[in-house]
Picture 1 (cartoon, rainbow, N blue to C red):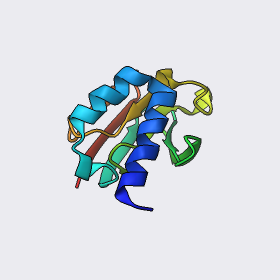
Picture 2 (tube, rainbow, N blue to C red):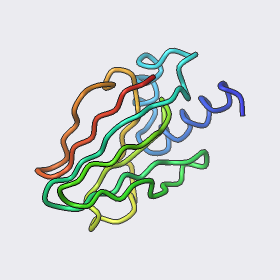
Picture 3 (cartoon, rainbow, N blue to C red):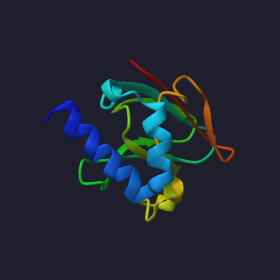
Picture 4 (cartoon, one colour):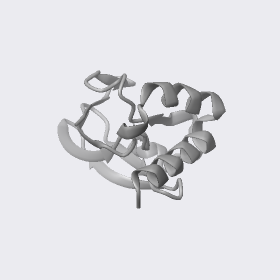
Length: 124
């Protein structure tokens, strides 16, 4: 798959999960040549188990990582990929409300989820 086709699929998934306005934002945030670049990160959970869901080329969520309480796990993803980090009890994401996108402006920023979940990633 070419970088251009990967970017097109990622943008289509963003439209499906977050809407047209989100695509415009990420189009500004992610330069054309950076879509699909590697992302490495760490997901942590304190008192509740969490799950990292990564969306595939068909915009379907797949469980990528189980994070038990009081642990951290590392993961790999791609710039522009849609993701969701939720309490395990919430199950598979049913809509775009819990979804986010691995963009460049949040690279290196600690993202908190309720009192228990924490995720940080870095684009390479």
